[in-house]
Image (cartoon, rainbow, N blue to C red; front, side):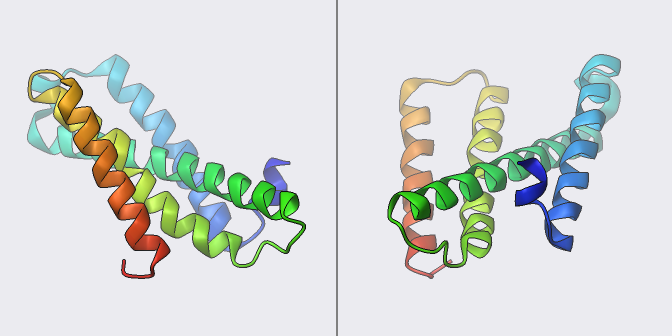
Length: 130
């Protein structure tokens, strides 16, 4: 099933980047601390989190669009293209939550604001504005 969704070159590159980001992220979590790696290390951590979440979001969106097409008895028109667009927007949410947590904790209104931003960004993607 995993190979059915990742059959083009871009899909394979995203899968490799996602797996690589997972292993580097795990190594950073267990072998370093924020004060030891400095600002560049924290930036690399945020980039790795985004790449990992991007791979997971694209895969989840692709499954959603394929299942939606099967339920509607229609073809999955541009499911790959739409999954990349929505995946890039959805992958920002965990990154925003992580950044918000690093500033001293998350409150409920911050989570609601991030959710509202994600809904707005998904709306803009659906209207081909982004």
